[in-house]
View 1: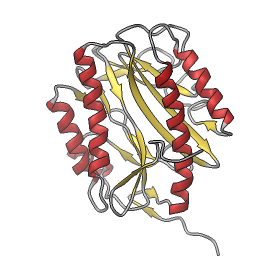
View 2: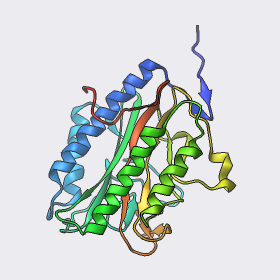
View 3: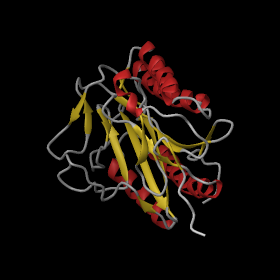
View 4: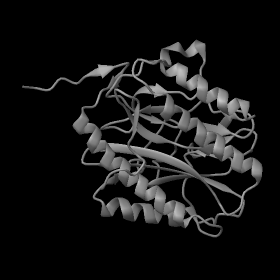
Amino acid sequence: MKSIMRRAGGAILKSPDEIEQMRRAGTLVYRVLSRVREMVRPGISTAELNTEAERLIAEAGAEPLFRGVTTQQAKFPFPAALCTSIDAQVVHGIPSEEPLKEGSVVSVDCGVRIDGFCGDSAVTLPVGQVAPDVERLLEVTREALAIAIREIRPRRWWSDIAAKMQAQVESAGFSVVREFVGHGIGREMHEEPKVPNYVDRREGRMDFRLVPGMVLAIEPMVNMGSAGVLYEDATGWPVVTRDGLKAAHFEHTMAVTASGADVLTDGHAEV
């Protein structure tokens, strides 16, 4: 008998078995980001981080999700396994041979597909010692993601949770990026629904009720200054803060369960 694809709020709902397969992908992403965390220091290049990520992904028999991705703005397919976004770069930074500098931050985003299922996660890392306000930026963005994990419950409207994330960020004096949001994830990296980290009642179409079996990549992107962003150059890849101040980005892939959130990219499984 042919299986029927279950949907809710535009999302393709995952079975318990599919969620466990996604956990394998998520655990590989966790391993890659853990290794990158060990490597980040002043003087290392993001190209070196990407080379190590490519090695770990290939050894696991997986494929990097980002390499080869195209967008309407991009002048060429994304060329690497990692997005490495430095300082004012918010997302989609391309690894380079330029050495990282003391006091900078680097956001590292990694996605993989293994046995047909995807995992996606990101972390922002300090390079050596950073200024207290920069450390606060990382703490606040990390906490915004933690709020989502704590607050997820079946039948809640996503906007109720996004409002708490936004309030926490703005009360700290920072801004939530509006142009880029989280997403559903499964066999494809980007599935419905879109998952904003803010609330705008004019965008009610982006709201949805949480249902067990949804798997979401939730990824608050927070700017130290204003929320405005733009493309850094004509390549159409790195997105930077409009005011040139630093940004942070944290992300987990998580499944909605009957009791809350099951984080699939926190390393609690073997690959």
